[in-house]
Length: 229
Image (tube, rainbow, N blue to C red; front, side, top):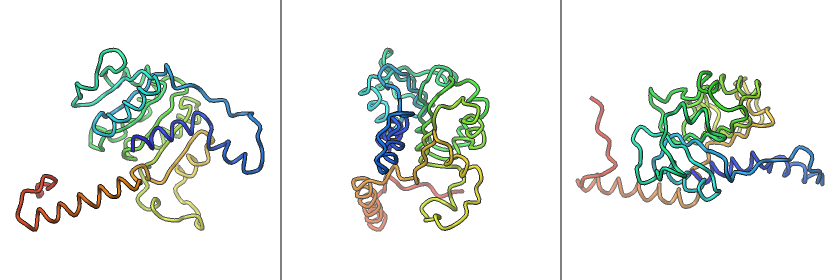
């Protein structure tokens, strides 16, 4: 997932998706393809669990400065220089790129909303490979139209349930917000596929089988959830 987030970011800021389409028509013009370096830029990482932590390391490899936020900070990540834990407002105000890696809860629902976007730098790049409802899609669209958001890279969408994982190419898309987002030249949407690697599928299958074996054998399953009251 962390690698997919970086792939989306690089694709967007280096205009790789546009170049790919052009060269299919043997158009090798560089007009409109100017990007920017990640080295020296500030990335705000919201959520520093396993995925967020890996994304932090990837960003450090590009020479980026990291501002991190997590309700439960991972102290081994922070070094006080290249990586600092800060409050969300500082992430919004100082980040050139913001990447979301947190679960969806009542607290994080529409974490990125009109108020949050109002605090951001003009031209901020937003990545979401976590949960669609972390981002208020209408506010995101308004931020793109007002030029507040320089680019948005989304692997998830808050109303994706009836759309993603299906081929809708022969149908009229009734979700006007998603249709407008996809139509924007600075928006990349992928199909909730950040997890979709051979290695990850093997891990999912192995964990599922192990869970079944442990439960059927009466052993304690570390992944078992408590039944709701």
